[in-house]
Image (cartoon, rainbow, N blue to C red; front, side, top):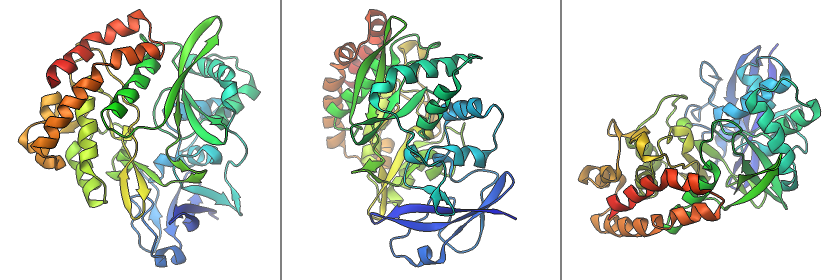
Length: 393
């Protein structure tokens, strides 16, 4: 007999019963609730789950993947369980309190993986210590500490170590430096990119950095306020990957993302500003999971920008997300007549943005320094930033 898992979301500011998952062993099917289908405020939970009656398969690709753990979360869950886990077990294992977006899962009226699992921001040092151990693959980790990290780990995408934390009554995301593999202060530079985007008129989440001392070494942790929460209410969210019914590893094209945005009621010019910024700073890891949409009124609109990281100029210009089938992208790629027409940007607006972006980027290195970047971290990115300002000028 199949397990029945109720699924809820938030529509018009209220939590509603959207449907049910019927689970059989390691797979299952989803079916919308009849009352939800009749609700005028109802919307498809994901494009892959059409708003119509009858069961819809959850395999081979999980349409609820945005609610499932990311690469880092899977590593923590698997380590805590001591065995490999199937997709639905991973999905249901994410702590309900920190789960991404507004989709929630219930069994017999109780939220799956319920519990007060989000630690306070004051616990960052301990969370970082355990995250280091997991990332290094240490064989001996305190079980209680590991499970605490497991409860704090949410479903926001990416391979970087992270945890949800409480800052007062608000939910924030803490992104940690890696113990191995970070060859410069990536958290300081990511914070600087958020500062610079905000200066250039791009919407970004509220953020700040803090220094955490561990084993005598001060390290930079990036804190971002969760934009899928509003006054403690959950806000529906889908990634660009889910929006395009794509899969991990498929780079995608701005053409398709713009098409979804326009048809869903969003503003493609906001995507153009981000795309141009990403090309300027060498944000090469701009895959579809690093773009997202929030449900506002009856539209899917671009979420605040996130996971924007510069790469040294020597890494080139090969992006995950292509433009017209081309992955070798520079600033000028987004100022061609075809690109401006695609995004619906006028020449006057493009010219004005080019000037404001050059001005904002001129202060990026100073911003990184203020967030804790050392001399090496500043020098390794100087050629990229200088080149960006030159291209824009």
